[in-house]
Length: 179
Image (cartoon, rainbow, N blue to C red; front, side, top):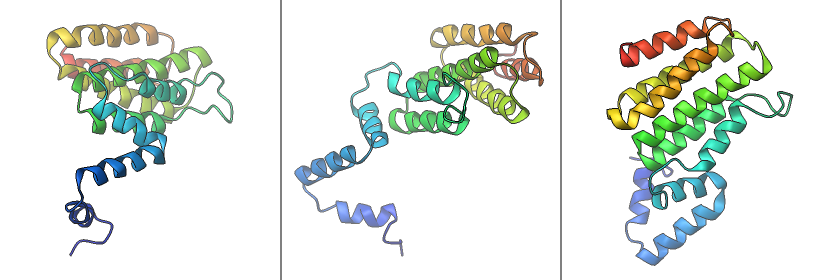
């Protein structure tokens, strides 16, 4: 038997509701918090393109203006925004755009503020690999500008950052595109 908080139990409770009651419930969920508002706006209002609000979250998480106690880099927050977008939109091109953008933000941060640490570079390599994989799944015309941006990241990190970042980026790029 499903627990009272399982979706199966909630689905049974929602089934008898009329349209007006469902719309009111969605309005209450919308008012509850910003993540719900973003999800609903992305699901129902976004018509192509990647909503700027997700890019803003990623930018603030991976390239804060000042790297201090209040401006720490957070791959977790960036990944959360990317996951929220994926769930809300189901748009592969928009998802690839966000992943490439996130890799650009993380790279920009280390280029601006210098050498970080191994966990940072491991997370950045994983993000780049996810971006390359997402881009490689797109049709050639949609992928082309994103592939160019990934290539640009290879150039930017060449000879500027240690920790094997270039090698990690190159390996992911080769795995995704065979180049």
